[in-house]
Length: 223
Ligand SMILES: [Zn+2]
Image 1 (cartoon, protein in one colour):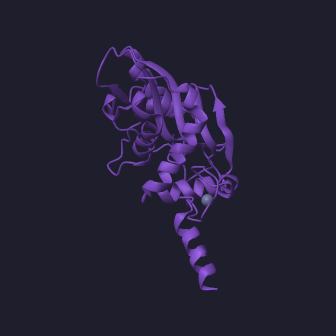
Image 2 (tube, helix red, strand yellow):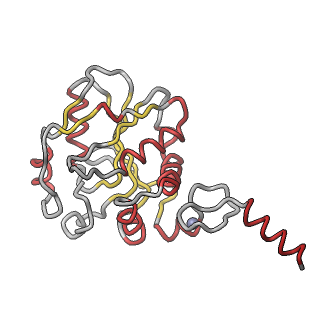
Image 3 (cartoon, helix red, strand yellow):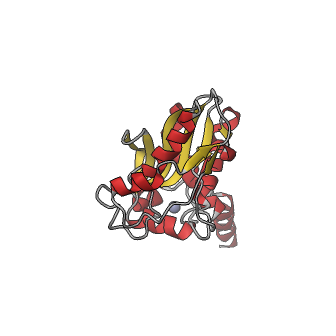
């Protein structure tokens, strides 16, 4: 009996745990299969090319939305690292050696920490070939909250809101954000970098707001 208890305890200690649900998992996965299903994570990621190339882990709804809303004010590094690793599995081939990962900066004083943490997690996964470049992009001016804006209003709101800090780079650049809604923010960020000669490849993010959900989803930070 004691022997069995000892072995069970040892298995618990030595088994890897899923950082999202903290349960032991046998599989060598960043996020356990149960959490992948619960969060609606899509094998290979959700992909699109409007208004720029993008890859997301899943739809920003249900459990994934609730998880990200909890993580934004009080991020758990292990959870964000696991989500970054899961996202990296979706976009490994798109990260060429020497590419830059640029988190989209927030204009709010209480900045959303997730883009920076996600970009750092992706850089960690990608190894020495990819570089975190948080200083490449800054906010040129404040923007208003976008919860109740439609796509055209968001484009107007974001136009010219970013500035590139270092011009004429040669490395391919991936923007990183937690959520993609209409893409107005990502597009404005990409334009600022492209105007200074950077080759922006697209956006890597965790959740994609479902079509038509931009104005309904009051928990959305307005990307
Ligand atoms: Zn799990």
